[in-house]
Length: 185
Image (cartoon, rainbow, N blue to C red):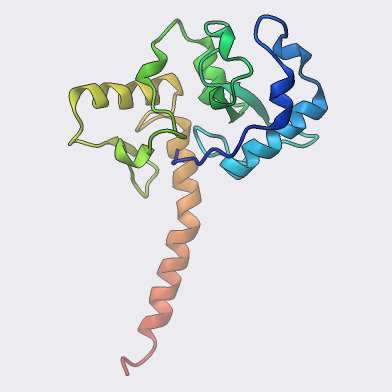
């Protein structure tokens, strides 16, 4: 989870209107246009867990509504409410959509706030909530991890980060060993 810079809205969204259109009215060509803008923002990674997502023919991703369409239908075509998410059954957008009602204002929105202000991302994949947060922000950080099931110790993001960082740690160790073979001069 990292800070995202939202590009301009895809032009196709202007063709749709809440109350008149449904998400099912969005044709594949329009969804492709939406994905192009999401990919600019997210670099083909899930907005929540940062898992690599494929938005092409063999999709492991879906267009995600930060505020659920069922509870906030007026945000269906609102560009600021749309992210790209992985299709993991037990985390991210799919997990969020299965939960009972919650307050969306309790969630950290990555295109508005920097997750680094709320979390420490440790090299073993653990996500820790910063200790210097206000009680309100600690609650928001806790809720964000819970709602997207990317909890600090047991969530799937921890294992993914642990695996991803192993290659970097191994490279650093090899470079250190090579450096030790050289004379200090």
